[in-house]
Length: 383
Image (tube, rainbow, N blue to C red; front, side, top):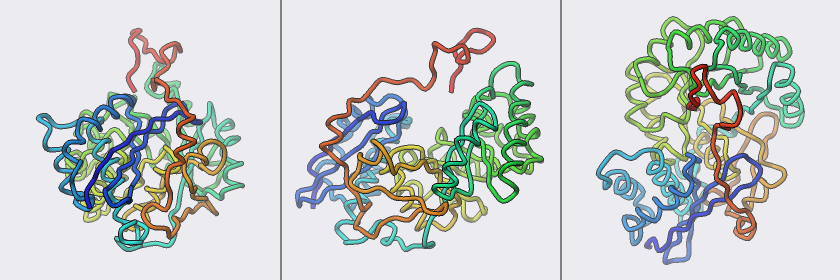
């Protein structure tokens, strides 16, 4: 069997960003699908896929490690997020093909370690009341037992106001949800100073956060070790850290407690399994980053089903509206858990006719028209 064609799709549905997909065809009529991470440069992802296709076309689709090493090592310089998400999407499509050849769901090829996967949802709001108003209907409908929130003032001046907002958010949510509900926070890697990050973390320590995600920028790994020392709050990475080399370094520094790489960026199933293996001897767990489409959600569920050291999986319910129409199947959340189907591969395909109706957009993570996008110096804030 040989790979004959790579096809990319970029579509805009419910979210502020695009969903980006890949289909790989073979000469025996079996195809597989994967998803790219939305690194922002969506057109560049499609161009990069075309560029690396000569290292992929004609290869045996079961040679996943060989193909990934070709993509990542044939480039002269170490690849950034664009190259890594291309390599990841290709790897994921190849796992789908492998499952279809074997007649098994992907997680069954590796062996299940659990029967279902616990998930947490987002509870973003201006304050604790706003966040709870958005969260409680989801708790009632889907049975979530954990959530992640955010405080938009983090990283901006005055810093004291941000800390007060953090305390209000966590005190209000903890009072309403009780001690048995897990509450994490995404700090969106907006803080550069370890001292500022430590103050923010200290302010919410009495409310027992599930984790603090991306409390500082990812560029200086030693700074992560500095903020984690002496804190009882679990420190979590985010999607901006995605190579096995960076995770090895963080683990060696004992700098993080929860690893949150994105499978669409960290080397696909092949790469994320390696990161999980690195983390297990240190008794660190993975809570995969997972805010994208129903396909990405399904892929992450397969990963957690067969990976021992995973905890709650990030999840947004994709069971209604346009999101549910992007694929031929959708996984459902019941009582705070989610399960894959027993169909081969990922157990779903893309809805190609529907994708044709959805034009991609050009988007920016930061809305520069809003005052909050700027620091006191007047420079646009980098997220």
